[in-house]
Image 1 (cartoon, rainbow, N blue to C red):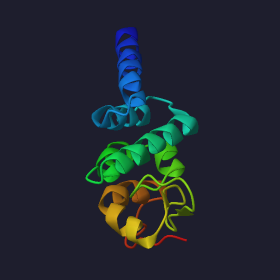
Image 2: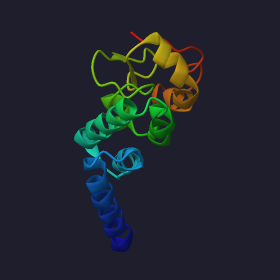
Image 3: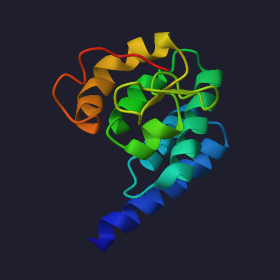
Length: 135
């Protein structure tokens, strides 16, 4: 109901303020909230990817795949950034589903377990997830 949407908006606001100050947990949490917002849109997905990239720059131990995995079924998120590292430039589409994007074969391989079930569903099912290749 409305209460849940209002709570979500307030949480995003407070995490946003903390993220603006460069607090690492807040950067990751705000990215997660943005990616899981119903009808987030491509702009929110790109913003989430930028937050994850910033978190990775602040702390090399941050694994964007852990956060991106939570939204692996969101077509807008996986179409806005590399599912393996949250990079937003130089992306190639998955050859099977033509939805997810990856910056390199290494990132595709790294994120395959997370992407595989969605790839199969988006590409029409049987046999679609037998191999993963990026264009």
